[in-house]
Length: 211
Image (cartoon, rainbow, N blue to C red; front, side, top):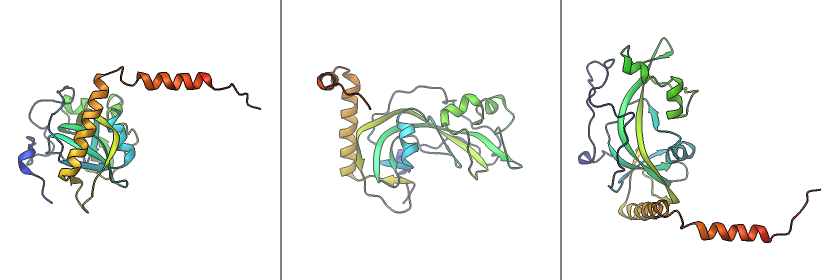
């Protein structure tokens, strides 16, 4: 299924010279405001990787192809068919290439060496120091503004697409989860009554000694 073209923007990578650095602004360190658009597609992956992204432990998603999509998308677990949250895809940059079966910077330019995905300072961005994939060129899909849902949303999968289109019903459910998460984040006192109750219940329990 072809993606909706009016929702995606193309980056300015020179296809004729794959070893040249991509043109355009460097967005690897920028902090944009969260997108207000309702995600219409979900990127599927393992649950482990999905939760790492949504909890801010992975801001670079390493892939073997350049990403042309920009905007806000849901993140879903492949086996469970559950959407766990959403995130902004803001850029795609080449961060390494394989030469003689060894990873090297994309080219010899200072920026390419700085963005090399095996640099210790960059391994914390993709959280995969032991990266082993059969890619010729590694691209970092740059992620910002992750938001985990309080409750995952079930979606109906379509066989084949990596980017799963979402039905209107699913979009309504994700919007509700997004609003609920935003309310919780803006009201730090909202969860205090439950915490106090848990504390009272804990204090009222008789002490026990392991034997």
